[in-house]
Image 1 (cartoon, helix red, strand yellow):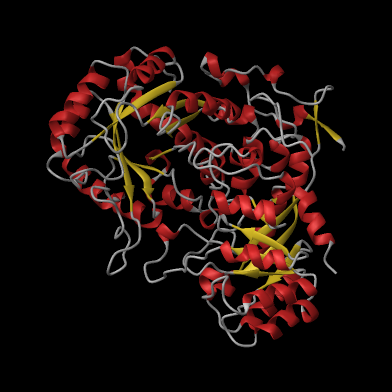
Image 2 (spheres, each protein chain N blue to C red):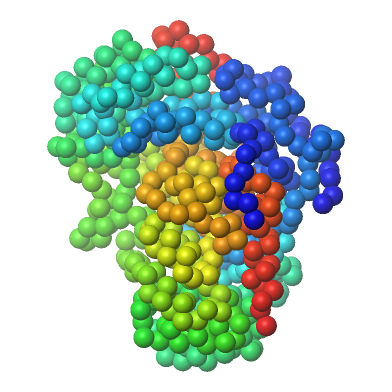
Length: 309
Length: 301
């Protein structure tokens, strides 16, 4: 990797500081390359963004062009995009068509569309086919809490099977927002992840990726997902101080779970709903080594995408 | 791949600034005061947890933490606990970078006042906290609170009120699922109206910040703190627009929340460097300077 002078990135004066002695760290003690430079790290693949309008609030970066600009500021070179329209629209194909066009037209070459499929409504097989054959999407994104189906829905195993046969990535959204702050007229269903384990075990090649999953997966379920399946996790709502590193080490602050291999974790920002900064900074909050950073930032997503036929 | 690292708190393998976020020195330059530190709250051993937390406090360049869990427990704030002595020792030993405020219970104003005298008037603490619910279901605007608030004000103590608007109930409404005694921003506003000269922090922005900000907006003695909820892009922009940057203080809420989550709320905002510094610590320091002076602790505003 190329090296860049560290000096370029400091513009603030140490003279203005008033630090408690115990927390004081001399500039010379901050680790960087032996010649005074940092390695230039990889660009990032963001596996969790959405385009168009969040139904309940005007988001700061809801315009796709401004979102792309924001992502690029944080060295994100590719973003896997779902559509906020998928939460409530019944014309799923219309949602997917507009998503594809938006990514093409305003995505500046970095947005990959992930279409919606809703097994609760008729015609989902055709929506799936179009995602793959017409829109050439690398994957689909399911929002079961909003799309009114549970993962024990009788059609769900068939969706996993058909999507797997097509080589599609299957992203499943646990939550879009904190249930405590939902609009009072909306009561989003509580999705249970448990049925997914046996379904994925029967589809060993399934590429299932959970987004904003944490409220729906408690410790014992997480252990089973890791031990018995190849299910992947995004970072977007991994919460708690130093949480990414502690997830990898199996040292949560509350409850318990076994270590989660870093190969199972993909960067996801949940932008534009969450600030992009939240998940970027999270990687630095944990004392991750270079291999771990590289894996989460790009390698794991790249490997998953590389399997797309 | 190895899943173990041995980095020291101040060691980074990549430069955060390359990714559009502050590096350690830049975080330090922001002079961040974490007004919502839960490192000393646990059902287990708070001292052990605190020690682990300090790794991340140092790594994220936090200048001072203010623990909200001093004395008793959040569920039973007025009953002394075995670790209380250890907490008091930490506050006295590490006063250069750790401060504490004490949970009280408005259902028991006399006992709460005794705790204030013990821990603030005659002890190391700098303020009080209303927690998220209490035994008798007394919110912060109940008349019981006047005695508590007046005593706190006389001591120039910080006043932090946990507030939430948890959606639920029948009919389903914001605040409908609050715990008994868990205050809303509207309760905070009602209290603040009775004490217009007493600064009060409305904690968690009420959870639902769009409503919380509006509830407290007319009361200039009420300050907003955002911690303990998901990071919403644009939330701090909104609060600054409606309240001004001088009425917002910052909290980290670790270990339940990552510092990154809470920092990002402010980093995302399109505000000036000066406003960012006020929110990250300047405003809190201004509010707390009297009590620090009384404690003989010199702080640079």
